[in-house]
Length: 199
Image (tube, rainbow, N blue to C red):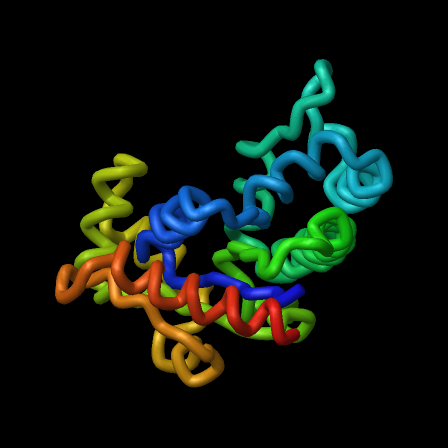
């Protein structure tokens, strides 16, 4: 089975591209969604988070106190690094189990915003980068999340820049309106199918 990672800057349209692949019958692992799930349901991870952030990390009903954690890590880079050092390995382990469950697929997609930053790209066979110009991404995220340009730029600053990601990627889908997303995805789908069968 061929393991393909898919990434791109915030607001690049990664999810839309993944949905196109899903319509062609390809299974997609959404790392950010799974991270949210594991933070609430993985007892080992929960215990680690409580050790670092205290009992307030979770509300009385067991749900993750996102607002409290966000306030803590926002002004303390070392705390953010500690949180990532707990969450990323848990997601990696979960993704490995998921890959095993889909071992008979010709190929799978693992979608993650921080695919390079977390180092998880090293366990994949091929990387697909979704490119979208920064000004389009900025406006898209402002509209989608109802946040200011400054807030979006702060989030963008936590991710590697596009040039660095492009250099490490094997394939690129351009989501800048210059060409059809579906046509690009179909072309890569056919390529990945052939590679998966030969893999």
